[in-house]
Image (cartoon, rainbow, N blue to C red; front, side, top):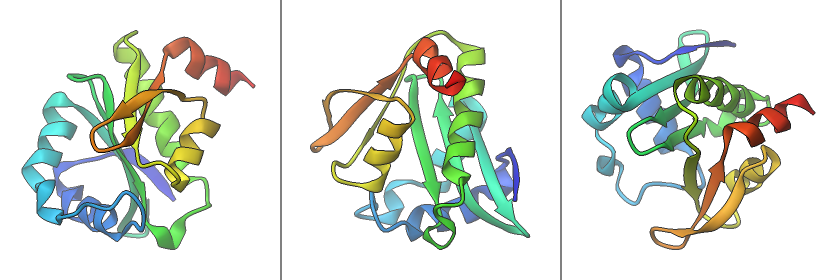
Length: 148
């Protein structure tokens, strides 16, 4: 497994991973265009990928404009190997090197993602969008969780 910054050339495979997930699926894959992903990894923030061989198997994207986690997805075929945790930590370390602003994300309730974020120390702060759980993380909390 190799973890590295995402490039424009990775977008096609990132979209494959995004559309392969079994939870937090998009109602229409066209809702997230390649140009959207490009903007998030080149202008609004940064992204990371995990590759096995030539294939992207997971990715994460942090958005500095809206101070949120825009994406963190792992191909279901390689779940439970620590890929999500490593992508999460790469992204969060970078985010807090750029700003001391708290960061937020949202995810559907009752999903593995909800459990994952709680385990990483994210704090539930309410609801967002269409009934998703909104979570927040501060740099202090992130550092505390990673010192344990």
